[in-house]
Amino acid sequence: MPLLVVDTNVVLSAAIARSYTLDLTFNPQLTLIAPEFIHSEIEGHLGEIAGKSGLDESGLRQLFDSIFRRITVLSEVEYEKFRDAAMAASPDKDDWPFFALALKENCGIWSNEKRLKKQDEVRVSSTREIASLLH
Image 1: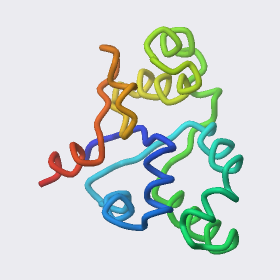
Image 2: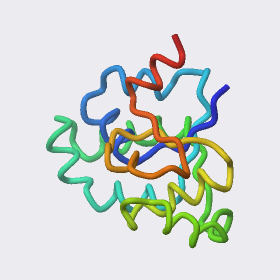
Image 3: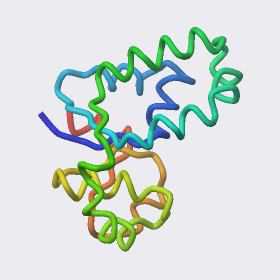
C-alpha cells in the first residue's frame, strides 16, 4: 500500500467536486497521512469551500469528518525536526509541514500544485498520477 502525504488541495478538491478524487481518497490501496496544519488551512476557508461545494457548513463538516477518518493526521511534534530540510526543499514555504512529514516518513506527496514538483527532494504526484499508479 503506498503511503502518501495528502495536500490540502486534494482534500478540498475531494470535498468541492465530490468526484474521482473523493473516490480515490477512500481507495484501500492508499494509506494517507497529513500534518495537523491541514485542519487550520481548511478551517480558514470553510465558508468559501461551502459556497463552491454547494453544501452548507454543517454538511461540509460532515463530509470532512468522513474524509479525515481515512487520513491519519500527525502532530507537528512528530515531524518538526525535519522543518529546516523541508523549508529548503519546498518551493512554497507555507507547505513546509507537508514536506517535513514526507521527509520523515520517506514517502511522496499527493498534490495537484505543479509548483511543488519544482524540487528534487520529495516525489510529488498529481491525482491523475496516483490513479494510474493504482491501475
